[in-house]
Length: 186
Image (cartoon, rainbow, N blue to C red; front, top):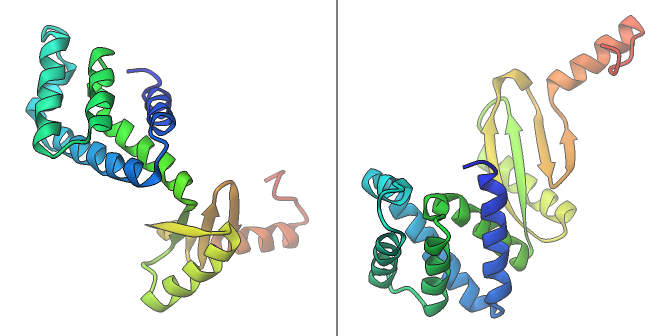
């Protein structure tokens, strides 16, 4: 489906708007994630939800039955009903990711991505988490990536801000200064 991420974000925001209580939203968020995990892990469910021959009502019944077995709250069941009626169950994994994003914003959690040439030692990860939490102005969730092309150092992204302390960037800057060219030119 084209623009799956955008569609997922719209549903996630609508769910957030419909569930005002933060504690209830947190539970609904967990339930949507559990449903998405079922879909992600079941090839049969993915095919059924994507199959245009299977009636929408049948897909909705399957989703509702699964959610009820997971102890789904009324808000979760209503959300899944809307998703099913609009033939969007195939996007449930994307929607769960988007609901997680909305939930993080509601809870004041900021996504931080750290890239390093090698896995970070626990002590350094802990120090970075403290420093980046101060920069972000709240709680953070760190995603780590190993990128050997960095050669050394780290690159941290907090929202739209990038802190680049990689050896690769330092070497590029040094080369530019030595050759008298700007980074923009080369």
